[in-house]
Length: 423
Ligand SMILES: Nc1ncnc2c1ncn2[C@@H]1O[C@H](COP(=O)(O)OP(=O)(O)OP(=O)(O)O)[C@@H](O)[C@H]1O
Ligand code: SF4
Ligand SMILES: [Mg+2]
Image 1 (cartoon, rainbow, N blue to C red):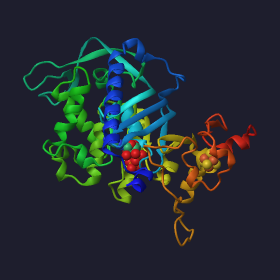
Image 2: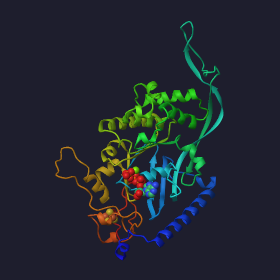
Image 3: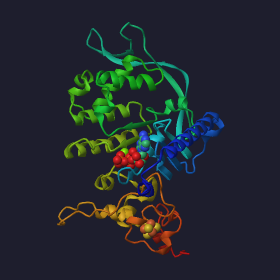
Image 4: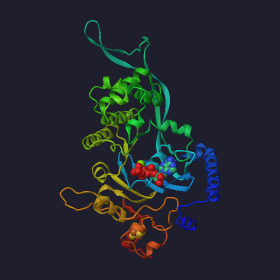
């Protein structure tokens, strides 16, 4: 028993009760604090107006029966307007939880945003009037004429006109009700497994229309259908009318993922989060989906947050790279900086473990050791036990984020040494 206790994996009934009590206390306090936030607390300003999203010292924890899992533990990075930012790191390092925090989809009450900010530049729309929807039709004499569109009951159709202005909000402090205006319309998400994200009992058309009906003010069923078909065409679906009436199980994996992308595009989002969007697909379809994402980004002139394990995808797709390890950002920079001049031993290890065409090796390199237990993180560098470049100073506190170029940041004592301000 004593031996088990010493290895840190064993908790007694009393300890378990104490954890449950402490979790309940913390969660209650966080929920109370959150409920007290007012508009003044969450309307804010961007540090750099060229960014669409700024994560600033974000902490998202899970209050589990074994203790507090610090899934995201002080993450800071930005997504510039029109840029693709790749988030990379090994399984469990907090990539998905970071993106779920941005969508306010962290599984509560166990999962909570504990501190930090997620600033997002939102567009507020105020309805100011209506205008007729016009359409081109051929009259009885065969001439093309423009007239006001009518619905299936013969009623004239109108579209709502909006005035728009930007407002920066802190999603970490925003009430859930307000977030519903942003989620799905300004920020949309493409999940890893399209079959579990699509509802098997509704047709594709039904599910696509719902997005427009829910998020586009003043949209009617006809407009929603037009938009759904347009989006299906945009994502390269060959027979959009047919697919519109299909159920998810009638489509291939690649088509389902295209439908998911179409769904994400219905409301012209400013930011698309793609969390491992091609893991469930074969290699050729993966390439097509990435081509499509690139195309789509140009068309909507939005930004993409791309989460992936695949460094090859990162090299081809993204402008900026964020490398995460055990809930923290260990290195971030432009794609050239991360690939040509990786500085953190973990980033260097990741690159060494990538297969290279034409280079014969007996075995692919794998970084030795494991990620520390997320419940009892050390106070020093989290990568220390696996690092082959560690030195005496690494025994100290967690390394600070060191700026090595205007866009390149590394959280490692080696970078401090290189910069010459060691000790
Ligand atoms: N609902 C949950 N309850 C408890 N812990 C969770 C929950 N969701 C995530 N975690 C923990 O948070 C940490 C980060 O998880 P996350 O899903 O963000 O990893 P990831 O980087 O996306 O990994 P992968 O590449 O495998 O998708 C992990 O330690 C995980 O166990
Ligand atoms: S701080 Fe030290 S232990 Fe951590 S990654 Fe850098 S060299 Fe390795
Ligand atoms: Mg994930």
